[in-house]
Length: 350
Image (cartoon, rainbow, N blue to C red; front, side):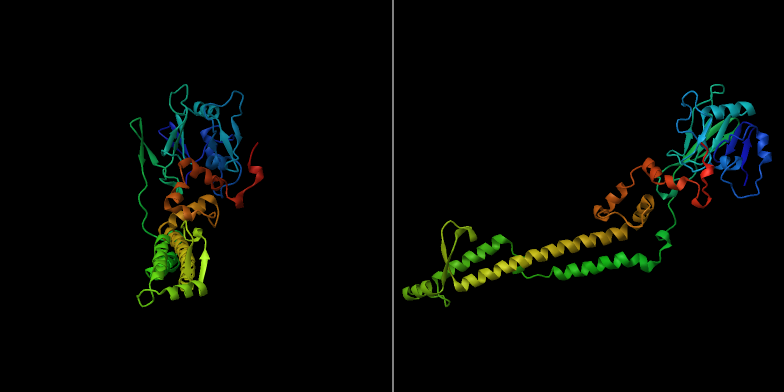
């Protein structure tokens, strides 16, 4: 592939930017292009250099080129460095790529002499890395007219994240359905098991009122009442039944009240289990529906496992974790550097 292109003898098109070793256009002829891109030198700079972060607004006395720590190699070139190169070679503008742009392009400060942007960045990859959500742009030039056209991403053909096989992909779905079946089984409860506290108290009051009748439904004799009062009664405080007066509960009713208390405890435990299973079911559903978002978030964070509680936030929470173009760019900063296998500390010029 060519390292550079000269369009209409006015626009120099390169991937990254200028080099302190590049003075004239004829310097391109001296580059040995039959090699892997080196970590230093003019060829490296043409591929890796960037405009300075405050391009066009540098402080007076700043150097024309500064070490590019963001890339791990090459330089940041200044506005003055570009203007000087353009004037020395009779060019109008430098057109380059190499940096994702939210709108697909960026026009930098204009040259004082030509009143045309000294540098134009064109980035033609929409939704870069499937996480930037950026537009893309192309530059069209004809009849001395420059047009920039933007476009958005197109949907991908369907494939599983990381080309995952269908069996691995289906595990969250299977887990969700198993939990659905478990929930259905646990929801088969008797009417008494689903009673609330008010209904329990009402049944207890009805049981107490039955003290005035015998088990056969007939009236209770004075002798029988006295015998029960003497042999099988117990006094309890009103706070236990939420009544102001003290009442007398026979042993046969006391046993029933005890059983109700245990049933209530079991019911609360049962409800807690249902809630816990519901939460797990939600997590499995999120895993199934948001697998691509989860993988994207893992890649952004540079981790193989999401922080605790991230899945519990739901699909909306996962999407909100990737908030903006600038945040995606920040997460991806490490990947913008020279690959580690090529990294050489001497490549960073200071």
